[in-house]
Image 1: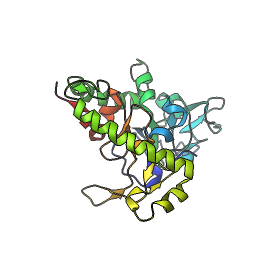
Image 2: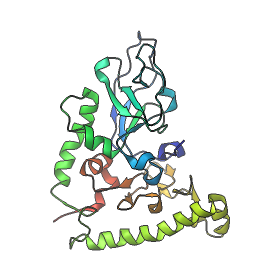
Image 3: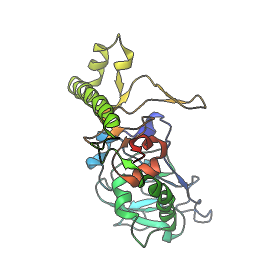
Length: 264
């Protein structure tokens, strides 16, 4: 199973949209949770180069929330990794859509989509109202960001050079540590750096070992590190996701990637 930031207790600060509960009389696939839509990009841990797909808790697989397209909602079979999966936000069948399934991901109650899935599907005219509302939520933010300089897309822009030079330097330095950790193995790498806990890593070398991120409520989490992000992407402000040049993803990730956009 691929690791997701949600499974290690990170504070998921992306935009989410609460979806209505399933009707109680539909006991065959009723759930006690509410379904939400979220967006994620955890870098090299994101399967299949973070292509257009969805991940979700194993709790929902093979239920009326998520079932193989070769089965039905009344007799659901489990979705298979790499195959089309029918996902449903609510009790009505109009809330369903098809997405490539790439495995387990967040805590129960969420469908976690990649930026590539949003880019591919948000422009479509016919969508479940719940997913359409999630996409529409990003529109005003996309409009705001489009007036700014996208530094990841334009690293050589005069106002972006200091930002991207610093980001590139951080990533280059951490890429070396990530590769070393993967080559040695996490346990051996951490033993080598036993005298410097800040160097140690967790979750298959992608995250820091000792949590340094903290919010106003005093909650802490382990940061996703730059070396875990794919080339051309960088760890976000709070270490929750990798930031790319996607306006739509940046809009839904909110503060996480905002610092890569500057006034022209």
